[in-house]
Image (cartoon, rainbow, N blue to C red; front, side, top):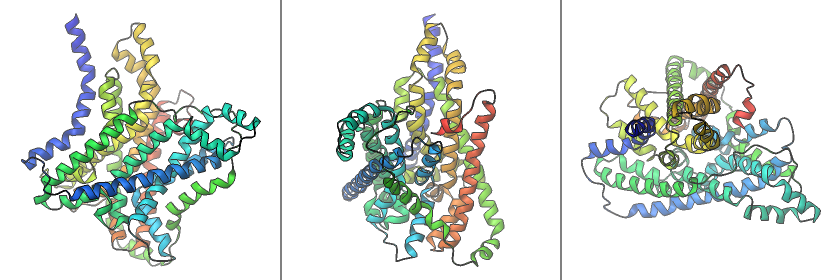
Length: 502
């Protein structure tokens, strides 16, 4: 009987073990192909590492500083019925592909002066990406936990600045630390924005790895740097995300005093304007005619993007469902939540080394690679928190005699199904706009994001802008497709898109 119980426990833990093996499989594949041990021939990477730490820390600090100020603006309208629309608007820079954000920023600045590619541009672009996310997360915490303190401060006539400062050291401190790590790791491991805006690999370790991987003689050094980077980020994430945060709790209806000030709404609005404002200026109308001559090529690339995004969404949904089956294995789940992918450059080269380069093979490489890159992030941000909150229901089910399969079918899956479809939609949206990983693995094949990047790198900004609108349209349609599936499956229940997303 005990043997049968252990076998059953192993079977239900198998999905999470297989997912863990899949996440580290690029390392195994690269080591098998390299056939040499990782080694460092020089310590040049240390200078790049410190510069990467600097620009990532600066981006995280500015994002949180401006996000805390933006909270005052968000709280001033948080009692409005349309507040969820404001949240969605503020999140645009975080959700749109980095290629679109860089294109808008460059084109907007180019209308006035020459764009200053370099460290400053990189920090500004990364800050713009995360201001909205930080401000919304912190505003939610204050709505939930800050109302009683705000009433006390209001009665005692505490100045708003000192009250906000006190909140950052008490109620907000834990989540500020978590958000700092989230922004820091996102900036540290990013390749897209450094490749587009930094102008040099000196400011980004991921860009440095990308440059090293171009030369097979430097592959052993590149792998050593990758292992160093992955271990560094893993340790940070393991410490930061092994404990629960509070920014995903439900909103309170109580009013916050002293802090709200509508003038601070200019911060997130300005970030959104810089992120997408450049997409609205097209002076040369002949670009429409130029793109019409490429209609068949663009259509083919668009079909590839749709197919890619749907496959990535399906794989994300499948992996999230598999983790529900392995709910009882908490340590393995926490490993996946703390795992940081080895980087776009490494992932791209690992799949490029697989000697099959047909269009179908490239599409499969795109889909699997992007899933392995995106899944740990979406699971860390939404999946693990959702599963962790199910502890009381699961324990109650076990107490009443439910086995693991019944817990999955009657508790975990029904409660998290809509959220999992949302996660599938988000990863589909991101996959459709990816260009950095797709560029490495493309082998001469195209998707729509690569076409936009090709125009951008050729400095044909207006053609790139027109196609970026098509890319955003396709991404949004695929996102709505997954939400529509969630609505259909929950058609007999009261379904709220607002509650699901926000």
